[in-house]
Length: 369
Ligand code: GDP
Image (tube, rainbow, N blue to C red; front, side, top):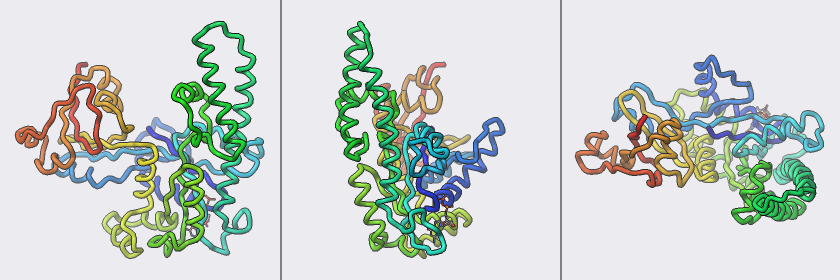
């Protein structure tokens, strides 16, 4: 499944946020005795109100949300790229995630020490960015050295190495200028050629501006948030405003009281909900559903995936043996009330292997075993 890593300087609210949003996941993980989950990895269930609607209509025994894995990558500090402290360990943790959430402190609280003495989002963002840039630069230099020494006679390999070289040189230039690799315009063959390096600044980033609860309703009134928004646009990244403390309090409340609490703060959606939306937007993710009397489940796919690829998210056998998918949009399913009723009304479509799955599709796969 998708992995997101939380980074940030000390005392910005990382652990508070992590513990608040993986709460449900911890309980779930406990149900899998054979999977050892380290304390800094959690599962975040993705809230989706459509799931409950479908589950009710299908009278499902189980309702299973889709999820992402969240890794708390604490300890990324100045000097990490030079291997100070446990720095290198953290950088290699980041290499393994699909996206980065950087928590940025935007709340003032004299009781909570800021590592640099004052709340200064741009400086916090730059500190971490620089570490990632240094690490990428070092890796690129080594790789370019190796490529220069290559004596391959294979024409195809030569072409690939040339693409990698030009791609890396473009990135190197951007990095020296303080810009992340993801901001560089690369040709498709260059992108492909450098992919194996898993550069840190190639990963999509969302800045999570952590504010005081009274700022939630009007985040732009907080000048720190504006600074984060500016940085996010400079660095081709996303931004979400949350209050880690509010998320922690929400997690303690029964579901039915959460909406009331959010209303009292003047917001419509929880921080987790907003974070999930931003992640889906940034990574181009989509959700589709399977539903029946046994269970209703949500599945995460990449935008543009075909029906067999989407089936493969459930099981590789579904993809290999794919025949067709009975498909109905979420709205049509709800209007009809069931797959059977949708079929009778002619709302159910038989889609083949070239069908591109749409957001909210309800699907039933037919496949050979
Ligand atoms: P980490 O070092 O980034 O993991 O930060 P923690 O999550 O441990 O938070 C550091 C301290 O800041 C804790 O005492 C938290 O209770 C506090 N904290 C976190 N978020 C907020 C917030 O939104 N407002 C205030 N006032 N304190 C917060």
